[in-house]
Length: 581
Image 1 (cartoon, rainbow, N blue to C red):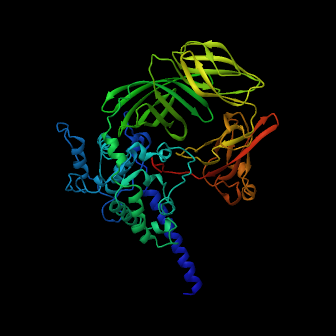
Image 2 (cartoon, rainbow, N blue to C red; image 1 turned 90 degrees about the vertical axis):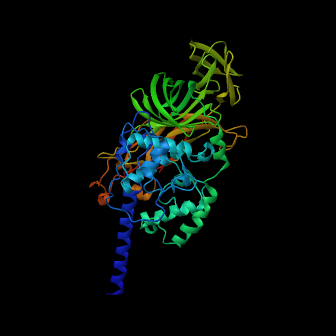
Image 3 (tube, helix red, strand yellow; image 1 turned 135 degrees about the horizontal axis):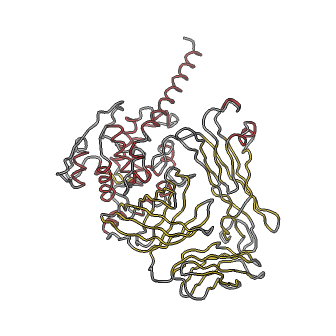
C-alpha cells in the first residue's frame, strides 16, 4: 500500500471513529425515556424537566451492554417499605452495603433532584433496572433530601436547572472547561459533590462507558487520560467536595412551611410584565398546591393552578396551568424562607417562559407588588398601573411627577402620571397610603442607547416530531447617568421598548448562502421562528435551513434613533434535552 493510500485510510478510520463516538454519546449520555412524557401530578424533578441520564457509574469501567436484561423487582402492596428500604431493594444488588450503613457509590455523592433522577434513568437505560414511576419519585425525594445540595451550592448554576435558553457559561476553571464542557455544560459537574476518589471513579466510568470519548471530545491534542485521571479529579475534589459546612448547616436548619399568601411578579420576554397573588396550601410530605390570580401589563387577567413538591427544603418543582398553557416551574426558596425565585416555561417548549419572583406577605397588610410601565419621560404623560394588595390612601409617584388617579381598587390602581419638563433623570419611590416601593419608577429625558437581550441567541429548525426552537429578542433602553457617558454604572435602564426589527446576514458567507431568505422569520415583537428541518434542494449544496444572522432593533429618539444588533445562530434539531444539559 502506498503512503498516500495509507494516509487516506487512516483519515477515513479516524472520521469513522469520530462519527461512531458522536452517535454513542448522543444515544447514551442523553437518551430520551418514556418517563419524560409520563409525569405524575405531584412531580419529581424528572417530571418537571427531566429526560435523561447522569454521570455516575459502576466502580470499574464496563463495556456498554447493547441489550441489558431488565432487573425486575416486585413489591406486594401488603409490604409498604420506607424510602431507605426501597433504595436497598432496587439498588442493593449492585451497590453493596458500606461500613457506615450506606451503599457503595450512592452514599459518596450529593446531587440536585434532577441529578438523582438522571442517575436512576441511566441505571434503567444502561443496566436494565426497572423502577416504576412511583418508586422512582420516592427515591428521588429521599436522595435529594438526604444527599442534596445546599442553596449556596447551586448559585451560579441555576440558569441550567431552570432550562434557560441562550446561556453562555463563564468563570469556570479552564482545564475543566476543556475536559468536561466540550460534551456537556459545566453545570453538569458543578451541581454535584464527591470526594476526590469518587471523582476519579467518574473519570473511569467515562472512559469505560464511552470508549471513543478521546476522539469525540477533540482531546487528541493532550495527554488526555493522564489529565482526566489525575489532575481533573483533584481539581473537582477541591472545588466540589463531598463534605461542606454549607451542607451540614443547611441540613440542620428547620424546614419552612410555604403555606400562605405570596406576592408574585415576573417578566415574560416578548409578552410583558405580570403581577398578582399566589395562594399556597400544604398537602403534606412537602407537597403543595397553589392558585394564581395575576394581572398582565396588557390589562388581562391571568389565573392558574399548580401542584408541586419541595425537595431538599428549598427546591420547588411544580406542574400546572396558567390560563390554557401547561407549564413547568423550577423555583428556589431563599434560605430565610421569604422569597421564591426562578423560572417557569411552557411544558413542551423550554425556551418559552418567564422569570418569576414571589415574596411572602401578610394577606391583610397593604403591599405594592409591581408597577408598569416603571418609567416616565420628562415632560410627558403616561398611565401607570400599580398592582398590590389592600391598596388604600393617597398616591405619590415622587418629586416632579404629578399623579391623578383614574381607576382604583384594593389590588389595582391606574394613575395618570405627568413629569415636569425640568425634572432630572433618576429613580423615584412610589407610595400608596402606608405601602411603599423603593426606587420603583424611573424618570428619564431620552433614550440614549439600546441593548438587545440576548446579545447572542440560538434557534433550531423544526420538523417531524420535533418543533422548532424559537428565539425571543427584546430591545432594552438606557439613559446615560449623571456622568453623561453611555454604558457606565450610573446609567438607568428604561426597560423593554417597542422597536422596529429586521434581519441581515451576519457575514459574507451568510450573504452568499442567502441565510436571510431560508433560515426563518422575525416578527414585530422580536420573535424569530426558524424554518423547516431537512435538506433544502433550493439552497446551495442542498443544505439545511440553517443560518448565521444579525438581529437588528431600532428605536426612535429625540436625536434620531438608537440602534443595535444581536447575533443569532440558526442550527439543526437537538433530539435530546436532559434537565441538566
